[in-house]
Amino acid sequence: MHTPSGTSLPVVPAALAPVLPSRYGLDQEPAPGAGIRVTADTLPGLESVSPADENSVWLHDALLGPHSADIVRYLSLARSTGGPVLDLGSGAGRLAVPFARHGFAVEAVDRDASALERLEGWARRIGPQVAGLVVTHRAELNGLRLEGSYRLALLAGAMVTAVPPASRPELLREVAAHLETGGALALDYTAHQLPGLIAEPRRTWAFQVPRFDGIDEWVVARQVFDLPSMSERITYYTARTGKLSTERVVLTTDKWIVDPERLVAELQSAGLHIEGRRRHRIDERTESVLLVCRTDD
Image 1 (tube, one colour):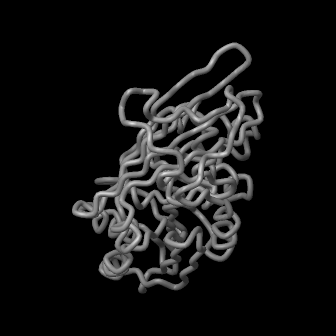
Image 2: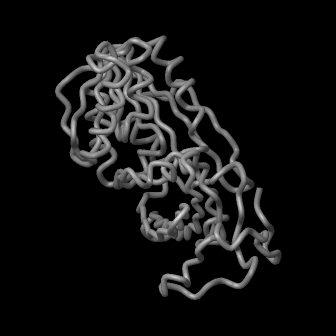
C-alpha cells in the first residue's frame, strides 16, 4: 500500500524514523508526500542485483519479496524436468539449497565469493547429503562459459536485469547450448509500463525491513530510470538501530530495464520457445513476469 502524492508519511517513533537522503548531504529532502510511497506488503521493482554483504541479507531478502513465491513454481518445474539444475545469480542459496534438500544436484553460479561461502555453509549445516549435491562456481553472468549439461536453468530474482542488453543474447545462447534435450530455462523480471516510466522517472519509497534479530531497519529507496539507456539505479539509504547505536549505510544497485519484445526475440534466436508465461500485478504500473522456455529440439 502506498501513500498517494500530497499526503504525509505516517508518524513513526524517532528511533525508527526513515533516514531520508538529505541526512547524507546528497540530495535535497523531498517535500512531505511529494512522490514518497510507504509500502507495507510489496516493493515493486526494488530488488537488488548487486552483491549483498552479511549485514544486508535482511534487506536483500525483503527486496526479493515480489519473487518470494517463485521457489514453489521452480521446484514444481524441476520435478517435471529433473536435474541437474543450474542456478544463475544464486546469491547465498535462496533457491540452490532448498533444491538440494529436495534431492536435486545444483550448480550455483554467482560473482560474489562471500555469498557462495554463505551458501556452502548453509548446505553443510543441513548435512553432508545436501552439501554433496551443491557445486558452486564463481563467475560473472556477462561472458559466462559453462562446462556441464543441465535439465533446468534458472535466472531467478530478476537476475536477467543484471545482464547488459548487448550481452544477454550471448548468455541465452550459452545456456541453451548446455540444456539437455527437453530441458528448460526459467527466468523472471519486473516489467515496468513505459508510460509510467516517462511520467515518473524518479520514485522514492520508504519501508521497514522485516527483521527478527532485535534490530530495527528503515530504508528510503530512490529509484531513478534512464530511458535513453534503458537502465535504472536504485539507492538505498538505510538506518539500522540496535540497543546501543544506529548504523547508517548507503547501498546502490544498477539494473537494465527489460524490453519484453526484445527478450522474446533473443530467446527465439537462442533456440528457445516460451512454453509458459505468468504475470503477477504488483501495482498499477508494475508487474512481475515469469517465463518458462524449452529447447526447440
